[in-house]
Image (cartoon, rainbow, N blue to C red; front, top):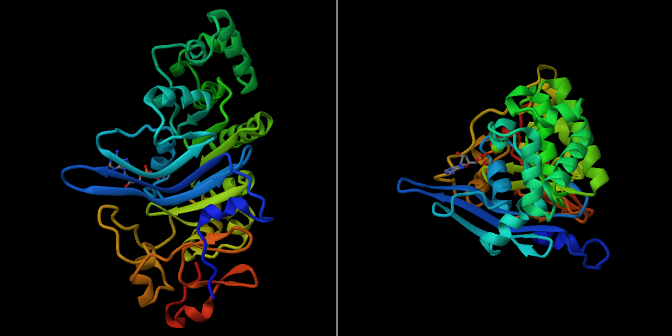
Length: 360
Ligand SMILES: Nc1ncnc2c1ncn2[C@@H]1O[C@H](COP(=O)(O)OP(=O)(O)OP(=O)(O)O)[C@@H](O)[C@H]1O
Ligand SMILES: [Mg+2]
C-alpha cells in the first residue's frame, strides 16, 4: 500500500512534535497570462526550510527555478501574473502582505543574488554608494555609519583593498569582484533568507569555487537560510541540506540532500545524475538527457516527464502522480516508485523491461 501524504506533513516529523519551519511554501502556482497564451511556469510547488538550512533547487533550463525564486520577492509584474498557494517566511505571508511591507522585507529579511551581477548593480553608482543606500533604506543609520558598514561588508566578502573598491563603479571591477560586491549588497541588512540564483555560473571555474566557499561560510556564520539554484549537482552535493529537483514547473523529487543525490528515485533525477557523472570532465552537467521538456503553455495530461522517460507505461500518460513520501521525508512523483520498509524504492518490476532506461 502506498504511503500518500502531502509534503507539508514533513515539518511535524519525526517525533510528532510540530516545529514550524522558518519558510513554508505550499502549493505555489505561478501563471503568466497574455492574450496569446497562459504559461504555467510553477505548478503546485511545496517545500519547507528551517533557519540556517540550505535548499538547492536543480533542474534543466526553463523548469521554473528563477520564477519560483522571484515569486518569493514578489518581483513578477502584477498585471500579467496569477499567483496561487502560499509562501510564508517567518510570520509573513508573501502572497498577501502590503506593498509597503513587501519592500521592507526585500533586502532586510529576504535578499537575492542574481546570476549576472551587472543586472543587479547600478552602473551609475559606486559600490560604496549602493551598499550604503541599501542599508539606509532599511535602517535608521546616517551616511557615515552606512559607509562604515559598507567597508566592513567588503572586508567580509574578501574584496582586496576594500577602501579603494568602495569608490569604484561596477564596470571597474572584475567579474569575481562584482559578484562579491553583489553578495555584499545582498548581505548588507543581514537577511534571514538569501536567494542565490545560479550566483556563480558567470564566473571562471576557480573563482566559482572561491565564491561558493565564501557564500557557504557566510551563510553558516550568519545563520541564514539559503535557497540556491544551480545546474551543477556537484555544487548541490557540497552545500545542500535539502535538494528539490524541478521539472516543467513541478518539484518531482525532494528531500535530504544525501537521500536525493545518493538514492535518487525519479528517472529524471537518475538520468541527470548519470549525465553529470558522464560529463563532469567536460563541464556540461545537464544536457545529456534525450528529448525536450514539455511546452508550459500546453502541459500533457500525465506525468510531464513521461514523453522522455524510458520507463513510462500507459498509466504514466493519464495523470501526474501524487507526491509519495517515505518515513525520512524523501518525496517523489513517479508511479513506478513504492514505499518499501519505510523507504522509497523504484519498482523495477513495474517498469516494462523493453522500455528500461538505457545506460547513460
Ligand atoms: N515574465 C514571463 N512571462 C512569460 N513567461 C515567462 C516569464 N518569466 C519566465 N517565463 C517562462 O517560465 C518558464 C520558467 O522560466 P525560469 O526562468 O524560471 O526557468 P529556469 O528554471 O530559471 O531556467 P534557467 O536554468 O535557464 O535559468 C520558461 O518557460 C520561461 O520562458
Ligand atoms: Mg533561471
